[in-house]
Length: 108
Length: 120
Image 1 (tube, each protein chain N blue to C red):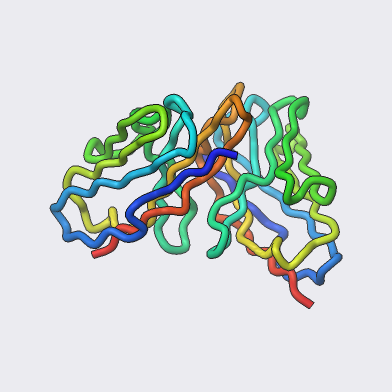
Image 2 (spheres, chains in turn green, purple; image 1 turned 90 degrees about the horizontal axis):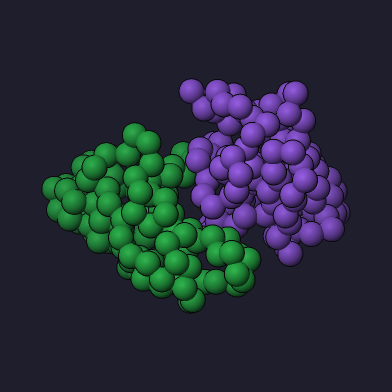
């Protein structure tokens, strides 16, 4: 099973600052990586798929990059509504696997 | 708009059973892979089962294989999760989530979730 390690566990920032979140896979997943945002008492929301494609309705301040084993989610200028937990998720064809990272909490 | 609404959660005893339902709306349901993802504070997010639009492809995580059964009724725009022989470690919020039309590479959208508590 491919393991995703997210860092840092918690990121303490202020509105307007840039957030850089990391997701590292235990083996290559190509570009099959997605990012989700989850706010308290809400369902996760898809932000990025295929490592760098924004989902419908996601603001341009969210961007994803990376391939292979190292991926980054960047929030260019944090808005108050962006304080949440962010998860990465991979889907590997071989070995067949779909797993989530443990999450990064972005807090004020 | 695309919407998923889960129901059927509650409290069950170890060894007991529950059936979860997920009602979908706002998209051609029968074309899409659908899944159940559970979430716990300790283990995080875990894909436990998915089913293709035609029900031809079904997956179970090892943690639930042989105990849980996923199904769908496209005429009712619904999927189900029959959970038998429940264990304490099955306690979680269970989310229904949509995959893609021909594959399951990511989940969009997710339902709010239904809480399952397994306790004596």
